[in-house]
Length: 363
Image (cartoon, rainbow, N blue to C red; front, side):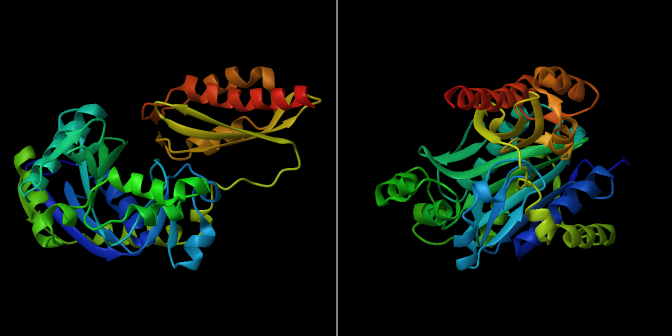
């Protein structure tokens, strides 16, 4: 990667955009930053109404697609892991594109604390008592006002945050595929009690330019850099257009949905520090072989193709050899997993296989 100015932070405001364009900006800016083309950048963004799933999630498992279609809510897939979430113009997004040298560490816990404390300081200048709450939330008197998260790609990191301006959590609950009882009036009010909007705290909708300025100045102070409002570079624009051509398609959005199979399918849910995984296994019970594996979840894995490659590597595997093959698969690759371990992946698959054994015994 070429040398870049470590004392300047570009401020880029891409405004209100469809989800596909915002995801294409994510890919273009992260790739160009990794290549040394992009300067260190703070991007502000907003979304037209949309439901986003994490890269490794299954749309039909996570999102109420019919509700989205009926209400004109776009469905998109992020380039990073994580869970399903709803966005609209009542939230302000911010993103940092930095490198390990700029941050002085590759420890995600330290990075999250530093960035979130800085963002909280900026929000406090608006007149509310915002505080960082580990691992990656910003709260006001115990109520969440901003969620954040980051992912490395080589030496570059994309760290993202969302500030609630006038957001109503009921909108999000209705797009997520969750049990009906969680959509009761009582459940919705309970969810509302756990979050708070900036407009509610201030008694009026704040001026967004004022909010952006407060956050930008806080980051500039934290990192001891000069702010430089600049537009996209020509190479970034080309990368954006190329990414958009792939991302603004059904093939991209629905790529993790389960393929058809005529083998018996057994599913389980496995929770660990690295996230929640949904595992499906299609088995040949007579030959004791794992015909096909399907693994989705709100997990962070890099390179992004790792899970798909693992599924392919385990196709038609003897059940007794599953653990050995999983360990061999990861031993041969340079894979980054945020708080997720190889043991977690094995345990998740074993939980689905145990479900199969239980059903076979019951039958």
